[in-house]
Amino acid sequence: MNLWFRLLHLLICSWFRPRLQAPTGVSRLQFRVLPNDIDLNLHMTNGRYWTIFDLGRLDLVLRTGLGKVAMRRKWAPIAGAGTIQFRRELKPFQRFTLETRMVGWVGGRILMEQRVLVGDDDKVATRALLITGMYDRRGRRFVTGEEVLQVLGVQDVVSPPLGAAAQALLAADAALKLED
Image (cartoon, rainbow, N blue to C red; front, top):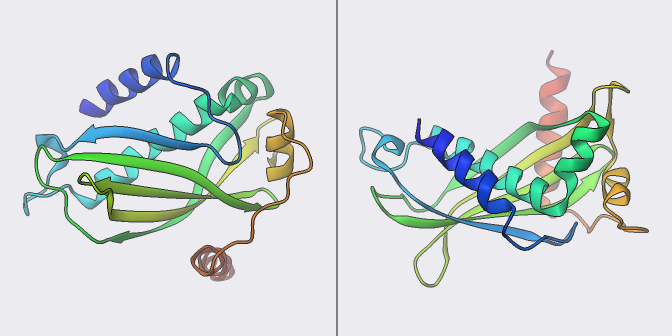
């Protein structure tokens, strides 16, 4: 139930937070580990990370203005694949920051990085890479990264070079599709 409250809080607060510029804007959201976020090991359960990551991506979509465009054009934001690395556990009631940013894009595949930061020195507790995209329900296709940025007023932008981890995620995703 607490995710509904977190979602409602995010939707209300996004109206008052500064706009983010695509593709370089970074969403930073503050959270606290709540009792229903923890597992039997008394730390945040691994499944909760993915759900909270949804909130970070939603914040980025709303604050770049992509949310309004997506609704008008009947585009649906999707997550297609992801990988996560846990470095430090999050204990009950611990504060943390979720940082979400666009890493780059290849065709209709938009790569996002999400990091959970802890402490005054923002140590990385968790890092995830995701393959996301905008699915055009009317056209039954994925919208290219360039087209997404163009509707946000960004012209002539080329994707930054993708790092080894992003390339490995794309390769793993392609390999999994071959096994169908």
